[in-house]
Image (tube, rainbow, N blue to C red):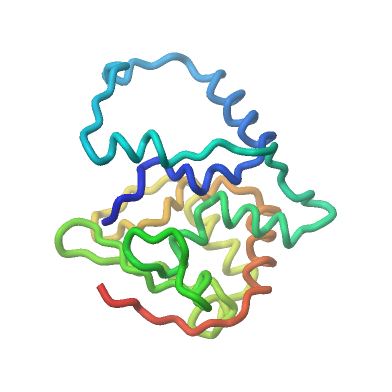
Length: 192
């Protein structure tokens, strides 16, 4: 729901130059594939304007925090580029910024189909979020999906667990450390 582009430029613009180069290097190792999509594209109004105006050029190189020197800043970097903040921070429909004081507190409604609404969980250390979890449970939640699993539509979530299961233990622990520094905010489902 909303006008957000499929490619979240506004988030990936924070991806470090080094990480972007690594993605490009990986993509170049893949064999060419015929997607069946024609190179020409026709995007109708008003999206044709958004595609031209939305992605803003970068003014300077993007450098990730040093994971050895500032582990919390690197955990926050991971939370940003993995879209944790975008999905787990409630906001007005079509808004870029989340509600004041609700960063990572969950409860933003996402509509899946006509009748299903999902609400991302609270990632703050409040008891209604990660406050009742241990570090081991958090890491195990990611590892539970290391092998792709078939799920029914009712079991499906917005979280791409199969992809995020590929994070290293160090990265999952850096996320945990960062989340534990957040102010504890109670979970609340936002109205639809």
